[in-house]
Image 1 (cartoon, rainbow, N blue to C red):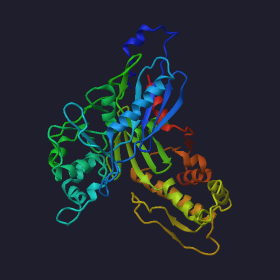
Image 2 (image 1 turned 60 degrees about the vertical axis):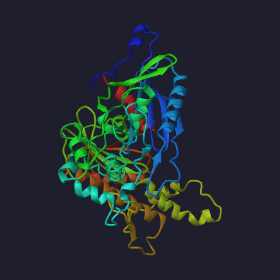
Image 3 (image 1 turned 135 degrees about the vertical axis):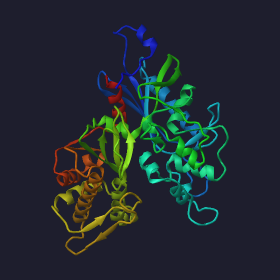
Image 4 (image 1 turned 90 degrees about the vertical axis):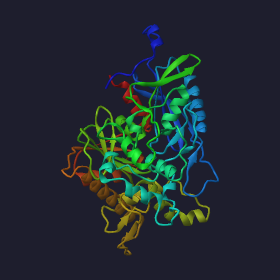
Length: 454
């Protein structure tokens, strides 16, 4: 991977005075985090955060919009605070949430709010009442095109939201489409928006390695302009600071950033278990199949299955088990430690539990079955849950690679660290060596790894 381009003015500084520290940002959906990245020391420090702006209120059901200017203000404030903690800044690197869309006019001014990846308006009923806009969209996209956009067609995807705008006559003339990350960087730098392919979720043609323009035309929004696609090491603009211009690089996808920080290699299977979870495998060249395919780095691609049940679903069980105590005003100090101890006392269980009660690749209806007096306990419940999660990850991994072309499991996310029994259950199911990533800021660590590459 080419080395990051340093600011020209840094060449005038002596080696003794020069610092290679970068400012790193993670534009998340609940918070905006930042820190100082030092590739020489290999550290992420001075962590700061801002809450991600609240969605706009009073919108119709299913709609989720955010004022993009409020996001820019929050990011700018965080940058300026971090710059006060730094010496020279070699550049600003960032990753962020993927999906969603916003439109700007020819001057770069936003003419829509940010329609978030959580926006579900495409599920609204058609005026005829016969199905939804999403049903109509699915009928117009061929299986071939579904594969070429990496099977990333979801209600909150940019293509879905733009299709809804086109169908409802709400696409302003002479506008440019982009993700939130591209908009934020362009506003910070007062520059033309530029995009890295890892942020082009579901809009990048995996075969041509360009925007899927023919599909946009077919779906009714071919008149839109799109950002220039650039490499992660190319500056997208310059941030004007009190100490001079600072190179600002194109935002990259947060999933890819985290996995790059985990130093994921070919023939390693990533199992990320946090609020949600995902199973991922690198491939080179692109191998399309019954899974999502996303651009990665170094010419590689990421075959992945996302939105698998994990922490969010486990919390539903914890909420159920603590409902009575909460009802009487009793707050349990550490229910997860109690769960861990209970699981350790139950080596195996024939209780049948599924966590698939949030819509996802495994369905939308969970269950608890085969209940008996001797297996209805916290230990049996979570031992069965851990076994089912391991089975689900293994089944998804076999979808990514039916010939099981992996030699090691790479665990990331908070739950494998918090629940050793879960990690061991998954590792035993796969029967290969494993390693765990025990850093707290995985995405910022990924940005650090990216700028450390020579």
